[in-house]
Amino acid sequence: MTEGSDYDYLFKVVLIGDSGVGKSGSVLSRFTRNQFNMDSKSTIGVEFATRSINVDGKLIKAQIWDTAGQERYRAITSAYYRGAVGALLVYDISKQATFANVTRWLKELRDHADSNIVIMLVGNKSDLKHLRAVPTEEATNFATQNELSFIETSALDASNVDSAFQTILTDIYRIVSSKTLDQSGDSVKAPTSDTIPVAIDSSAPAKSGCC
Image (cartoon, rainbow, N blue to C red; front, side, top):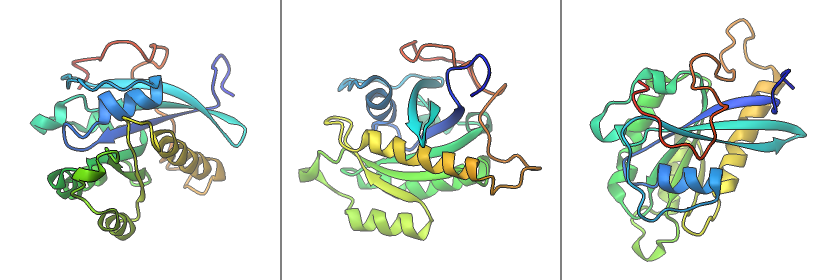
């Protein structure tokens, strides 16, 4: 454990996807604060929250970043992705267009993020079964073809939200701890000076003007 810290590893995970799919007010709030805000509004800037989980006896502190509305303006910069070791690519199962745009988001992620980043495809709002527009099989096939893990979640009823983060953080930890990566490249590591200090409380208001 790092001297003076309360965790063994710090991993930066980014949330990407179309505006309105439930990234910040839903998935982020449910995982980090166990809250769900039906009337969540996008905030311009960059928002992040933290939560620690145990993986194989190690305390992993997840620093989860959200675009906080920037995706509406195609304003996401490479600084948002810098230092990220994981990404949740989120779409809304009830809106086909948000799934169609996953291809563009994946390209952007691979253009700007580290090549070793761990990516999970997340179909959010699984509680809207009566409005489903994206078949689970279609999303599963896309994930398989692009070597992504896949899960469907509902931030409303908390279904699979914890499982999504537990899975991706475990995958990241096992990659890092196995030391299979080229150590000279140091390509997957916890974010340091390129991030906002993690001492900020997870319930703090959204940050703006970051990038």
